[in-house]
Length: 257
Image (cartoon, rainbow, N blue to C red):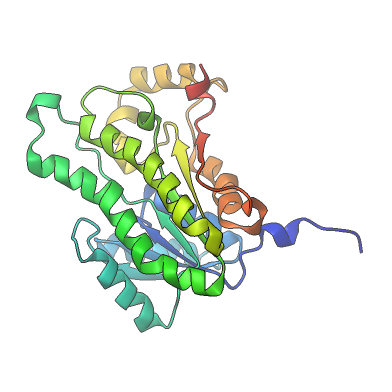
């Protein structure tokens, strides 16, 4: 039999921890990893939504568990590490997808609101990497995928803390790569364009605004969640073994125009 590419993308036997995995981009990425063979652990605050997500994944024969944790709390990494141990699991893949965008005018942002954005978008990925990367390194294999944004490189109205956090995640991605890649762990980020999720509901509820965003892309449409499948599996698999510290825009060419 000739050479086949499937093993490069096969995640059978891997365990993926996905924060914010009960909805939106996090759930779409968990589904992608599960379809590639990984077992997934969804970490989120809301039990009912997490249970629904697990049921949806199970309907596609994806093995999934839920792990309730508040990523805004300083002890989130301890809670999650303990939960994984209680399952008898070790994370091979970490997807930091949990996030928030309160969409407040610049002068109305409070210190607490600013801190919430930083906690979810920067502190939680940092602490989870501290907690989980040593185990990956001991096995000489690991994948960390962060979620960047169009706002990592450009500004949108009423999103200053969100943009600051998403700018920071690009640099954190590089810092993680510099620290851990020599141990077999790659760290990259995906920067999505406009996708319909609970986080972007205010955008998609305005048809004129949604159409304007679609027209800004090179492809001519906004994203659908399945557009994230290939990039997710690629960055989580052996296919991307020599790629680290990078940010991949999955935005239909929005940032190219």
